[in-house]
Image 1 (cartoon, rainbow, N blue to C red):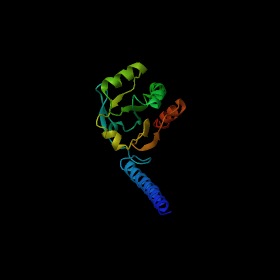
Image 2: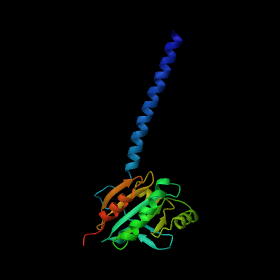
Image 3: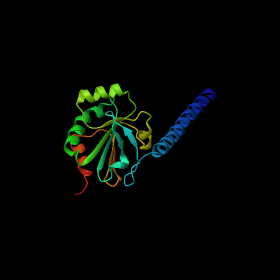
Image 4: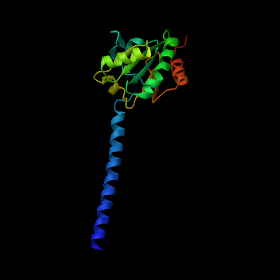
Length: 177
């Protein structure tokens, strides 16, 4: 009887300890993810990256135009699925909306091969040090940030997009005439 009580006490303690650890981790993870996260209605964090065509893209120099920012990776299946949708919308809206696809820290050759394979024509930059990714609080990929012509974040979307969503997102940041 004594061994059984001791065994139950150890099991209870272990379960309680695991629950406390899980709650602690959840609180920590939520607090950490909020640190760099952009918020709808607030000014977008300025950044500058050089795309694969060696053109400098600086968010702050796009006042007067909406900006579609897509964070992605070649390893990300949802990212790959939405690329044709983004390409089509880019072709339709490129005179009214700026677009930058920010690859999260992959080798330039890998990224260029992906671009060639999919026939992408929109600007793609690699966030080699993940500085922009961290500044925007990006976690899972894909992630899309919509910035209006005044530099204000209008939408933060994490996860895959349908073709309809991509077109709606581009349309939503076309500046009023």
